Image (cartoon, rainbow, N blue to C red):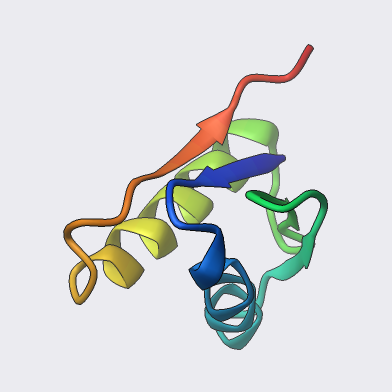
Length: 72
C-alpha cells in the first residue's frame, strides 16, 4: 500500500516510525512511501494497521497530512 505525506521533509521519519512499528516502509517518491504489513491476514487488516500507525504518528504532528493512496 502507498501513503502520501504533505511534508516531504518528514518522509524518512515516517518510514522509520512505521518500521519501528513492525511494518516495512520504504520511500517510493519524494512524497510517498510503500508500506507492507507482513502480519496482515487481509488487505483490510493491513489498511487498518497502517491507518492506526499513521494516526499515532500524527499525534505529535497534527499539521502534517498523511493519506493512503488508492491503488490504480
